[in-house]
Length: 289
Image 1 (tube, rainbow, N blue to C red):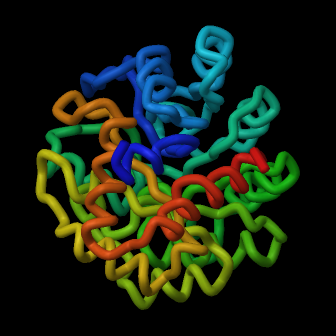
Image 2 (tube, rainbow, N blue to C red):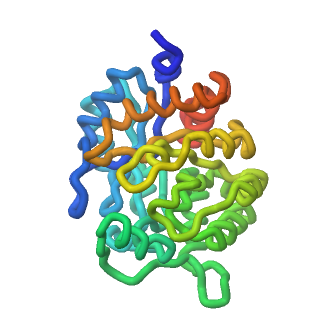
């Protein structure tokens, strides 16, 4: 067993897209994904879909594949109801472990996904800010709900100024489980965070997410050396690894996670750091410790 295989034993991936989905064909549904994760020794997975909450799927999959802890989530894109505190409350009460701010229908992403992926998505471009630059009241309400139910808030595809305003409010409200989603991923966002901004967010208390799709996709690939550099700046203790996989052109997400681990090992990230990012930190976020 090589090092990457060994590190997969007990690994957690908190960002995997599943099918069905109306505009994109996905590699696996939730059950297929759980079988693959089980066979590769993973501890837990979080199912994501832009168009609907995945809690019912996750709960059924958990019964069928008890060896892998499978969790649901909700993404606040237009198709799923947008920035709706009532919907967020319902989903977290049902068991959602992650609430993502708008992704492809965010103002920082909607035009980019049209240009890069040909996705002409419905509704107005979403922002979490009022005209004066402060957070919308419904976003503040969502933050309070996420805190009360002790789940994770992901930043989605928000622009850097939105991310900082969101994180400042979260920290002031006492919400510590904030994940800055797939940093350095410029394929789907008009504006991305710089490394200096990433470090600032980590120092504020946010967790930085590095995803393999950033380096392995069908649009344009970021050099993994840039991921390695950013991890060393932000600190493994402040970071998690995910795949953001599920695309039909990519292998199943667990295979992608193993490949990502291998790439990072080759780039100079040591085994202890990877253990922290793929096991310790996600386990804490999901209350598995």
